[in-house]
Image 1 (tube, one colour):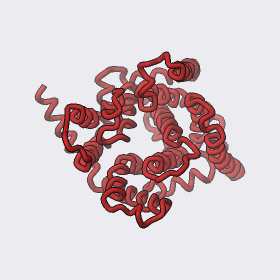
Image 2: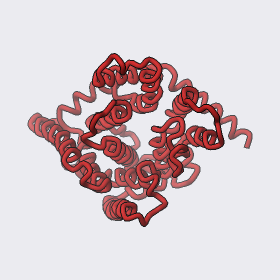
Image 3: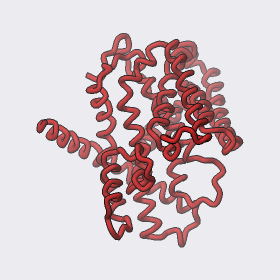
Image 4: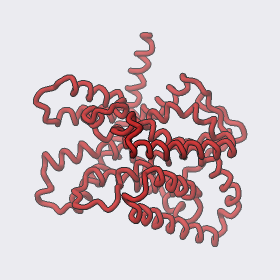
Length: 365
């Protein structure tokens, strides 16, 4: 079994609806960053949204496993990683092969083969060679780095089993994240300079910081939970969440290209901690079944974006007859429809096929 619960054994932790919405908006912004025809980019959405997504992913794992035992072994790491991997790897393989098919490579050389294999095996984020990292599925570096974070999760869980330990670790990991960026800027930390944005080590630090704020979250939650159903409290917290949305946008707009990435990371940790406090009417709205359905296929939308954008832009060439805002909206709706259809019809079937392949390979060992 993955976990052995103590007091929380019979308790199912509720989904954090407002934070789920924040993650969904972050994913939409990343998709827009990739497929929209920008004339001027007011905010570096690519960097900011990736930071939010890695931090929130770490926070949600901390939320789900706080004070829940998980064996700290390499075997457990493989099991836990595969539990997540099986949900998106079949689609990643499909998209990568489709991108390879649509690529305009006249002659396939060794570098193209390495790029293809790196993408299929989710190792590309470790490379400093741009063609390998971007390969035939340039956005998949995100999942490559995320898988590394998942693999380390059983070892990181011990950092959140007490609030004192988590706060001490948060201070040191935050310091390490700041120093690593300072060293890169000064040209003295060469192992990560060419691969800083996509690097698994940097993203692991952000992921772990997100995990480390979860004990503080539960401390705050213990104070606020008694007011959860009070109408005046729900109204106040609703306006507080709205204020947070505008605040995070203002900070990104005001300090774009001014603050170093590491300081945005620290700011986003605070915002995600507060968005996680799921009180107020926004939480009720995003708990609606329709909202949950729309937000449930984020990963599928992320993976489908490149191939759909490629087909619409390069094959159908709708950009010649539509303005860019309408073109983006049409692409986004198609990406959602295709992503949700895949999730509904094919996701579990392909995951089970992958299970059988892995089982067969293990039986040969």
